[in-house]
Image (cartoon, rainbow, N blue to C red; front, side, top):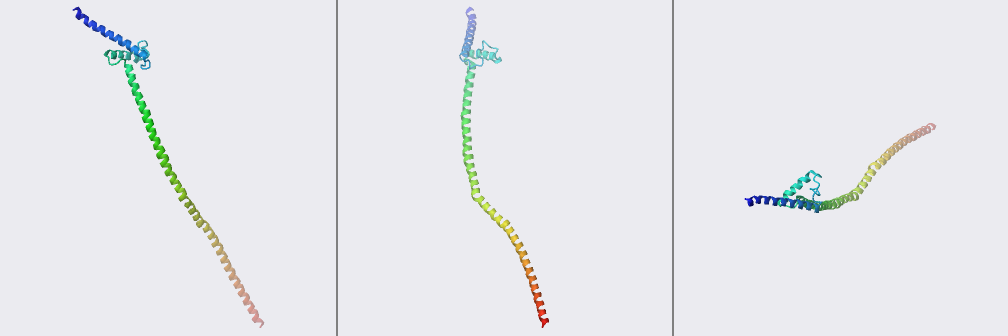
Length: 191
């Protein structure tokens, strides 16, 4: 009976011993790695953060069940690995590939194709169409405006001068006819 009553006590002592060891081990791990767990010494300063005491108790449970040495170490380890992998993937792949693809597309397509097309179209318009438009505009301006003005001036002046000359010629002819008629009458009167 004594041996049977001592076995649960021995088991309980073993459990308390394991709990004590896990406590010291968790404190030891936290003191070794102060940057892993947010509470540097959870047993000394449990009132720093409300979740520190719970995480410390949770570390006892997990270390007692022997799932890990310290949950903060495992969580921070996996979190650091995950964040480092994610940030490395994000920073290396996303920024490098995306920026390289974007810059390559921008620099190759926009600068080469767009600028080449733009420059070719602009140069073709400027070199081929633009001088012809200027020449055509000058030609049309000369033909339409200058020639119309010149022709209108010429026609108006020439018509007026022709009409005036014609009137003067008719008037001079009439005057000459009258003079001839007057001279003939005088000549016949004398004879």
